[in-house]
Length: 106
Image 1 (cartoon, helix red, strand yellow):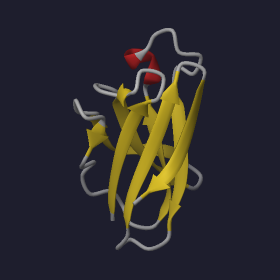
Image 2: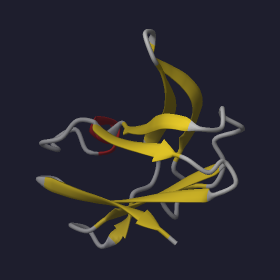
Image 3: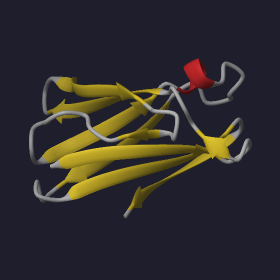
Image 4: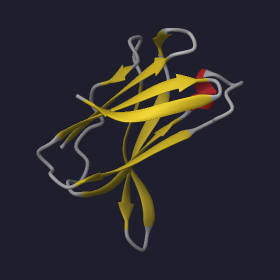
């Protein structure tokens, strides 16, 4: 499984650069465990979170407050399920100070 992400600041019309992002895996009965982390590059991308466990429930935690302390949403969670460990998951976040949209990219 490969997970990548991209953040685009739609209010500024620019990439969401230097945003810390954590990849977590859900373990039933134990909660969330961090399996990867990174910081978006100048183009707003993280290309590699390392090799997490295969199937299961994951979430990306975007530390938006470190990018924009005035944002109404200080952190954003994107929770998703991996059924096929061979798939590539590209999670895209469109961000503004008062809203956001998350989608599975190509």
